[in-house]
Length: 211
Image (cartoon, rainbow, N blue to C red; front, side, top):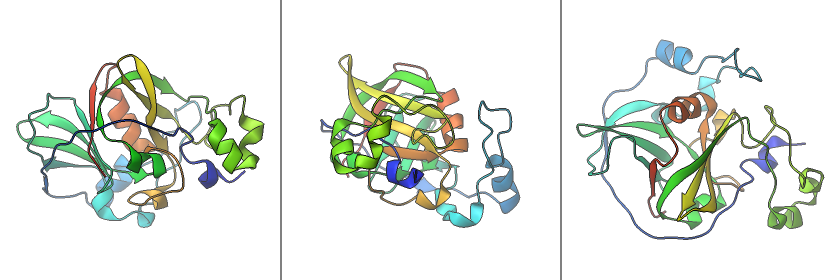
């Protein structure tokens, strides 16, 4: 089954609100990128190194100037520019390149991380199965693994105790970063997602900017 056709099975609905402002400060050398995006052999399902040649360097992880009144640790998603930010304080943020699915352009607003999962099961929504009947065999859930559209880590966004169906997930497909894809929410390279996931406790605030 083509993993691209299932990239980020979670879809979404709701919202309103925004924020702004950033400027880059330096980037990674090739040697740094090969280290940061190298293989993760100790994972439950070993993760291959990222093919750096398949991603625009501007989407590699970096620290940038970012003026915001949000607390340290807050995640800000900018789907229009294919970036995810983690506020670090002192006018700086860690910036990650992202891909954005159709659902990622439809919703904006304030939310929080209501749940986290390592190597989650993916269950395609009924609407997706109607559009793509080839997803029907996974109606009961696709087991974890490299071919699972949610990848190695997923952060689930909630509002008022209710899951919004909006997720930040991981992908091993560098060619999708900085692009719109057919379905799903917000995807980060697995190495970036592991980095963000490890610093993001449940109840972390998330701001999704209008697309």
